[in-house]
Amino acid sequence: MSRPEHGAGLLAALVLAASAAGCGKSDLVHERDAHRAAAPASAGHVAARPRQAPVPVPLRLSFARAGAFARAVNLSAVDFPGSHLTPRNASLENQQEEAPGCSHGAALPLGGGRSPKLERGSALETESISSSVIVMPSAGAARSDLAYTDSSAGLACYSKLLSRKLAGESSSRVHIGHISVGRLNTGSPLGVPTYGLRIRADISAGASGVTIGLYVDAIAFDYGPAEIQLYATSFVQPVAVRTENELLELMLARARLARL
Amino acid sequence: MHEQRPDPRPAHRRRRPPRALLLGVLTILLAGLAFHLLASTGAAGGPRREASACTGQGAPQVASIKPQELGELRASVARVLPERVGRLYEEGTIVGSSVWTDAAPAGPPVSRTAPRPAGYEMRWWAPNGDDLVADVLVFASPRAAALFLTRAAAPRCGHGSLSAGAGRPPQARNLAWINPDGVAEADVYLARGRRVYRVADAPAGQGTGVPAPGRLSGALRTVDTLACLLQGANCTSASSGVPA
Image (cartoon, rainbow over all chains, first blue to last red; front, top):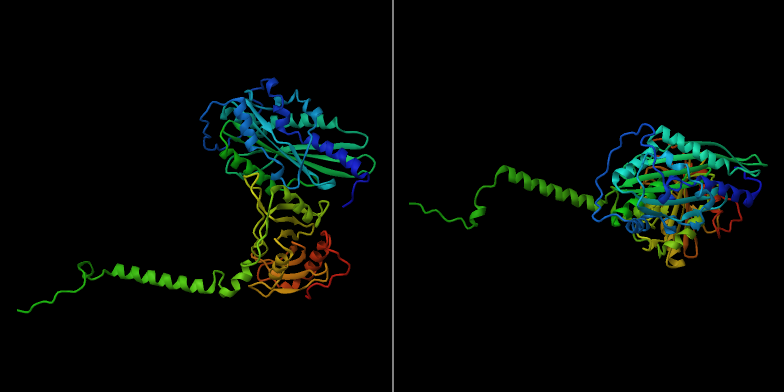
């Protein structure tokens, strides 16, 4: 396998592009939860999904309880051996004005939280993981909010939005080429319905002509009123399915132990 | 008048047992006999003395480490197949017996602070379809590591396996055997201080039936070469491996 010519500098730029693509649905939709506008009620067909058993919510949901639940569930560096914390791309996180239009949900989140961005490996082996937990007012609101991944219109909306954002990341050194967004068939690794998207982008180095694939998987499941989401970003090949499933199982197990 | 002698048995045993009860007792006796026979021959059907050679029973156990220390173990085996040459399909912690049982590596536990076993494994699909594995196992002492290597690289139970010194890395040992999935596999083991490393290759394209470990000469060369990428491997010579 050939390597890019410009070593660390080029790869740093590629990683920056990866972090741009790594802003998953949570980043796009929920980062500014207080300013989120109401979304269209329907944007396409939503496939019927089996529902999981009701999650007990014995106490009134609040911002503080949502935050505590998120802290209990979200991933940390020890969950992804060899990883270290890396800063998020603040400029991208401020560009999320249009994203709510891709979602079906109209309800505002009550609260939640995100994990740090956990990155490991170097050069072509770089991969990163992050997670988020968003607590909605009801289980129905959470399901509705996630359902856009089952909608062709929702996918098209997200693809358009992502392409626009990534196009802004192209430079003389790094070119972001074809971008595809599709449903990720996750099966049912948890015994509960999951929603998945895979983004694949071709990233090439300006001078060398070397093109590599960038994969971003965004997988979510609803746990009562909570949306629990995993983002996995990797070059050349996607993060291993088993790794993704183990991290989803881990968050589900923590959600069951935590008090919502 | 003839006097009838009283039956000395307790009243509840005097009645003649029904035929169904006799059959039940017979069944229980037969089941007990079958259990005794199975227990004396081992669950896998071989002699009991071979059981430890199948499972690693009695081999030194890996140490425990803090969760934060797993990253260094991972890095030590990730270098075996660098730069995305292979397709990584699973990874996680392992214990010593995993090299006998071929158990899948474990994912992260719920607890963020609980100690982890000081063993890590990564598995890849190679470009040619081979199933490649790299392990690191950390023991309490170099002596325990050496003892583990001796046990792990010894011929295994079941179909005839081959064990011999590897051409490289220095002091490494090769093992050709049939793993619990019934697949021929080539391993190389090397001990460095408290650590034991294993690199394994289960070649693609193995048909059904009993594979011959002797066909593994190419895979042995592969694992010997990949093991030279491990830190401290100190490779200087070409591989001879186990003769085919």
